[in-house]
Image (tube, rainbow, N blue to C red; front, side, top):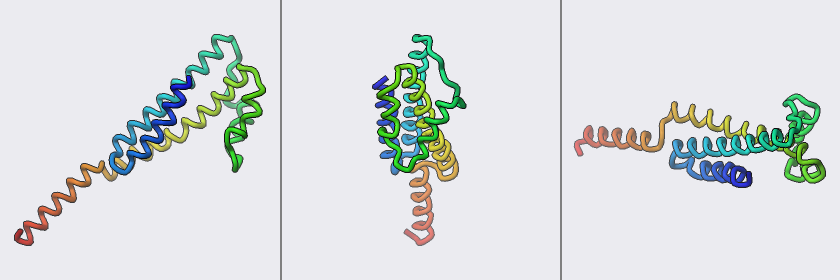
Length: 144
């Protein structure tokens, strides 16, 4: 579980770093991040099933409360720590389901945006090829 969580975070960071040179790499790494978070999500579902614990619905009172904490202007681990550090494993696992769903939302939106940008603008190599072809045309028309 720790590795899946770490991998999700690291792939987001690496994808962002690659964005300047390769949209394809950024898309792939952001997809890997989402896959890691999905793996983590399934681990928490497994935990709840193995412990025969209730899986709270996304519209349950508790889930809505946790989801609304995301709108606090200073949200951080401390926002959730009171609940995570003082509740049973089953409650914490349900809290983590909410938080992972929230975390997955952003990379999913980012991937959609990146795919649209790639469709409209192409990748770096493609844009460089266009510039190179235009330069050759200009050089020929100028007699070089």
